[in-house]
Amino acid sequence: MRNIKLTVAYDGTNYHGFQKQYNTGLPTIQEVLENALSGLAKSEIKVTGAARTDAGVHARGQVVNFDASRWSIPADRINLALNGVLPRDIVIMNSEQVEIDFHARYSALSKTYFYILYNDRKPSPFWRLYSYFMPRSLDIQAMKSAAKLLEGENDFAAFQASGSAAKSTVRTLFKADVRKKGKFVYLIFCGNGFLYNMVRIIVGTLLEVGQCKRPPGEIEQILNSRNREMAGYTAPACGLYLKQVEYEEQSVQRYLKSHKEDS
Image (cartoon, rainbow, N blue to C red):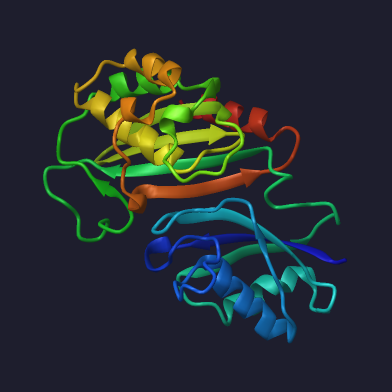
């Protein structure tokens, strides 16, 4: 087996999520990648993704791996070959050969997502597909305080949408933060895994805190309830980005150190 790892960036606006939707005719990132790879390799290639991003969600650092045993092109040139045939809203940032036992999803130690709010009185036509327009003033400090209560190992059942097949709803958030820069508010989440719509539900809940519709401390009650109805609404997909997937043993510590230096 010749195991190839790709780091992929994409604009998810025109896709029905990452995961292939069989017999639906709906375009997905996985399907486009597999078609491009199969065409170049002249044989069928299937890819495994690190995260199953939803329809409309974007990525800067999605990771996939696939078996390239029947394809002789050098690993570090696969990204160039793919970028020549992929649509402009999907770009291969890096390609490399990895160990045979590497698995894009199961080898991952942490994933980082961020959510962008466009916080101004008037919307931006340029950011309408890549952020969530929020015209109301927000209490950023209250949102930061609420976000901190989500850190650590918790049962996030209250922040999971229906339809999930997850065996356990316990996850660990290494980092949950809120930052404002000019007209933009960034919500950052680094964890060992995320439930279906978990980040978007957390964002919706934090926005209710930011608008003084609920106190920051209510986050603990929501977690303890394990009841989806206790949490806030699900924020739109357009503001969500998969930033990166980490695999090295020191990845989480390095992430926390870098963000501590930035704060």
